[in-house]
Image (cartoon, rainbow, N blue to C red; front, side, top):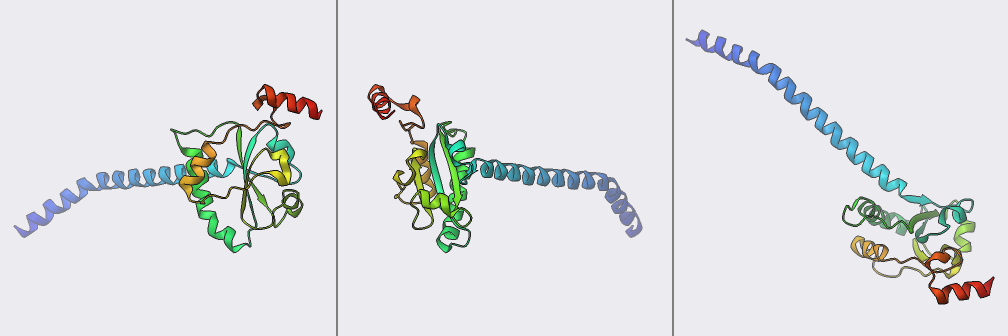
Length: 183
């Protein structure tokens, strides 16, 4: 009887082997798909933030209202803020109920490699978040509220187009008259 039990166990194990292999293959495929999707989401969020430099700033910000992070890779405060910024960007880009408004450009300026652009915008401390009309230079307002992810999301989602030479279509009649007087 011990021999017949061993034979039955071996037969049962042999018949389960293909099922076990199939299960392992499915689990591996699912794990790879999840990792690939997570990587795609990370890449999408990363590409949603314009890497702004002195060379491309005017071109990339034309006609936009901006929300820009000025930072340096060696800055301790910037390193501390990086996880919150990354989470903010990811949630901003991937929220199905709040798609990013087309008039808002998220950007980053590395003050370690592009000091001239940071000087042009009056950056004195890092990290600094500026928003608004990108042609304002050092006149752009600084975001001074809490840098908690939810507050950043609410702020940027609520940003309106800014009337100015950079985006005259955002102007009302009075704003257009002011622009015309400047010409």
